[in-house]
Amino acid sequence: MFEHVRLPRLPLFAAVAGLLVALVLLATLQYRWVGQVGEAERARLQASARSRAEQLAQDFDREVTRAFAWMQVDEDMLGPDGGVRYAARYERWAARTEHPGLVAAVYVVTQENGKPALRRFDKASRAFVGTEWPAELSALRQRIEGMEGGPGRPDRGGGPRGPFGMVADEVPALVSPIFSPESRPAEAFFRPRSAGFVIVQLDRGYIERDLLPALAGRYFASGGEFDYCVVVTTRREPRTVVYRSDPADALHSSPDATAGLLEVRFDQLDSGMFRAGAANLPSFLAHRPPRDARRGFRPPPADRGFWEVGVTHRAGSLEQVVAHTRHRNLAISFGTLLLLGASAAMVALSSQRARRLAAQHVEFVAGVSHELRTPVAVVCSAGENLADGLVRDPAEVRVYGATIRDEGRRLAEMIEQVLEFAGIDSFERRRAGEPIAVASLVDEALKACAGTLADARIEVELRIAPALPIVLGDRAALRRALQNLIQNSARHAAAGHWIGLSAEAGRTGRADVVRITVRDHGPGIPPSEQGRIFQAFYRGRQALAAGVSGSGLGLSLVQRIMDAHGGAVEVESAPGAGSAFSLVLPAATAEAQRAESMEESSAQADPAR
Image 1 (cartoon, one colour):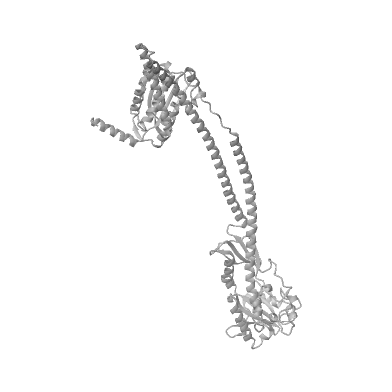
Image 2 (cartoon, rainbow, N blue to C red):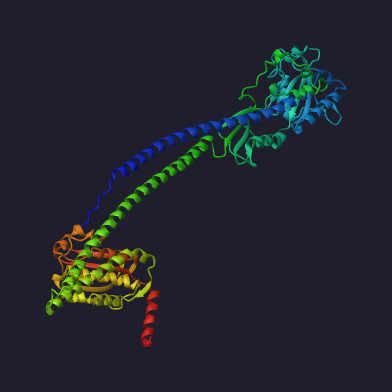
């Protein structure tokens, strides 16, 4: 017997273990890295949202501040010809701004007969015309009347919010005192003498319809679609929605970023206003304050403003966006690692399979060589004796001839099994679906084994059920499988001198099957060996001890043929009680059976076929 050297497995196991450790370490680092990237992405998105919200608020307040600055009224404009000068200032602002619809109306409030009188600037007549107080300014009227000193008197610090004016967010409107040109520039800038008030009413409809949508689209829309929900609300209680980027957007209690707006911010005034010329500017801007005073202006805090813009990501919040992105990155990363691990496992399995195949090849060559050696040696020895004339007696010559014949048959059978075993894979690829009658298949197998059964003086008991369904498959391969079972029983159960061969219809689950069974009264197979008898070149201890000839390929070939036909081979055996091997084949469909019946009827009707 050949002995093959087992290749060392430790390097392969060590490589696989090292790869698994590396994968676990890489997965840990990947998890931490994805977490860090997620936190950095959250901070980046939050900073971007906050920056864009502040830019929107600054652009809005820049327009408000420009309107506040240009719409100021000097004290000398309250006279009969002052409306013409003011009209030039108004028209100059309207020509320079991108949003001339921001200002709805301009009013001046002066003291007349001890009461505040209201005049409205009429662009058509280019003059201030007396008018009644509109309903939307009623609350503002009460606030002006309640101020210390009232309009037309010096402001002693109890005036409106801010250095010059205040924002009436409920209108909305900008309110500031009318400065006296008699004051020095610095004094006019910080503690002006009030000759009245100017009220610049902003067009809330224009703000909601044009200004805020334009600014929101500039900073929060990409490709025409908003990536954030932009909502502008008042800071009064209850909060009122001024603008919403999508009417379906709801108010979020914790937006991703907020910024205050609707505030007069003098830091937003650009130098272009001063280059426009002092003739068309308010007196306090035409006489700019000293440099030290201008240094006192600082950008207002982000929480200032009577309105508030809040932005929330479309996914719900930045936390949800980052969490979703993190989960997706983790899924992709771990999927890649799993694919890498699966590839490594497949490589290891392929290596093990290659080892097994190499071992099987060695065993195949060793087994075939060993099995071929005996018949070849017997044939050569008998042939040499006959050729050398050592055997002359006719009786002995017949014995030698019978020996050569038997060993030749054994050799031919072994070669045929080896070829069948080697070509079973190609058979599986080209397996035909020929309709086969089970009775004829059994008859062909018995005829092929007639010599072996006669030499062993074995009685065959045949039981074939009538009207068996046909099966589909390769006739030669199925005959070989049944023939192998009969020959195995003849060799291993020769002492019993009996073989039972039966065929019957049955069911396995929901499928119709045909079961062909070969029984014997041999020594049986121990339970410990029943799971290995279908392995190639395996032979039981009893067969080896009894010197039963065989290659160990028969049952393995039977199993592979049945697998190729979608069937199975079953064994029932017990020591001393014999064995029973069954071929379980799926029955053909009703259509195939009808076609076979019609063909048989045609053959019987036409004997010449």
